[in-house]
Length: 546
Image 1: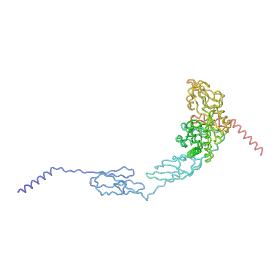
Image 2 (image 1 turned 120 degrees about the horizontal axis):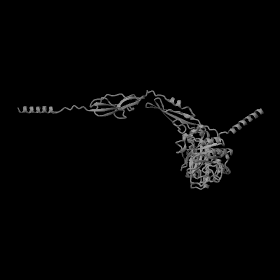
Image 3 (image 1 turned 180 degrees about the horizontal axis):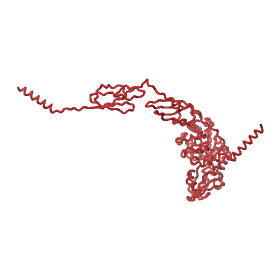
Image 4 (image 1 turned 90 degrees about the vertical axis):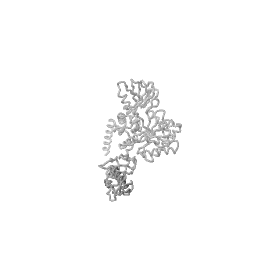
């Protein structure tokens, strides 16, 4: 009886407890993410715990076969979709190359845009319908990745590369081409125009500049401590500067050696090894960038170099000899020139007669020749009471001739800038030193005020112009259209090599370059008439003899 009572109590308690426990019906879910690895957005699916997930098929991947999905990135172990899902997982697509995939052939594109022989710049498209085209070459200094051509001095073989991007697939092609050498007309022995052009004033070329200049002197390269050439300053504009060669204008690199910049020149020139290293470095730069020669601007041997004038003077000549030998062996048409001071205080630093043997032309810097204490001319054609003794074009030319420099190698300087000082009249006492002003500044700030408070004057003896700013008490010495034409005529009358300009970037108006053209390049009416008459006479004589 007691056993039955206990059993009933146990059953009652069990039933009571069961009725009080609340049943947990919550279902857990997990995320299964699918990554196709071809740039598509990752797709995610929510799956109940313990259940399986259905496989999805990714977008086709051109050139590849889809094998399935894997839980381990980079693994080829294919996931079994019968596996229950008990955690969040990412599945990665597994691909293999399709051996039967039909590779497209875009080789025709490189033949379409790149000829076998390159003679001009190329138009290389970057896109073509749905394709992206990437171009490059084996020598970017001859043919750039944009198709811009800089013609070399001798024929060159290079390779053009094309990469075609087509919906994630890359196709690569290459083609060997010939680039023909540039051809220049031979330089005359006179009536030449050399235009110095600085990187800091470079603005391109006008038609008149290209028509007038036979040679552009790009400024500047610099001699380094190990006797190489630093060209960092010219790199931003080099291709733009060289573009003028397509119009028959040569481009040479001027190597700066003014004041302390002459120290490395001096050290390099002091030994045979140094001279050889520097000459080879100069040639290397010229050949790399397809320049047409070198211009030596070591202007003051023996000044600020730590070496005497006598020592630097002798070494300068030896350096010119080494440069000439090195360049002429590589190409006899390469130009070797030098800028050397005019006046009476600079030429003594050079053995002019011997230096001239190794230079094609000597550019006499017939400017900056003014007196520091009086309102005088800085670039006069002839000496006068308003120039320092011997500080004119004519006196400088005579000094060079007296020292054995042939007239045909002499090039005289023209200034595209003026110099301003405090003074009330030509010949008056000057104070405050001289400040250089570009012709652009002269035109805008002074020439535009002529006949107002600015007075124009012309020294008939020196054949040089000047300005007086009456309001501000300034005297300005400069070259204008009249003095430039007179200098050009002087060069022609004396059978000189020609004229040079410092520097053409200082006049953006074409005013002064036009004067140079009119003075030395154009033929006067009288010359044209005389030439026509001479041809008629010769023709008549030929007919008479027949």
